[in-house]
Image (tube, rainbow, N blue to C red; front, side):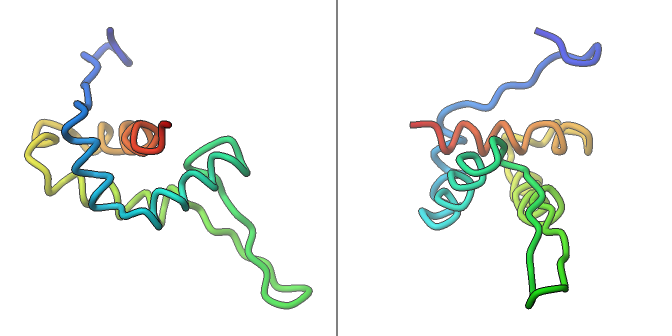
Length: 99
């Protein structure tokens, strides 16, 4: 299978198990809630402070960056490019929250 002219990389079950341990049950619940509420593990929430002040909370930039940084430290992802990390972090989360 190819993606954008490149060979698709795979994420094995052992890596998913290691990731789930790192993410902790609280992190897994957070992403399950994202998926349930917004249909994606990478939504943009709108947070409110009081009645008028609203600001975006982009999961891709915040929690997603933390996961991409974790991936950079794992030998399984040593051949990944910056684009690969961007493309595969959500797949890793999806696999981790599968029932």
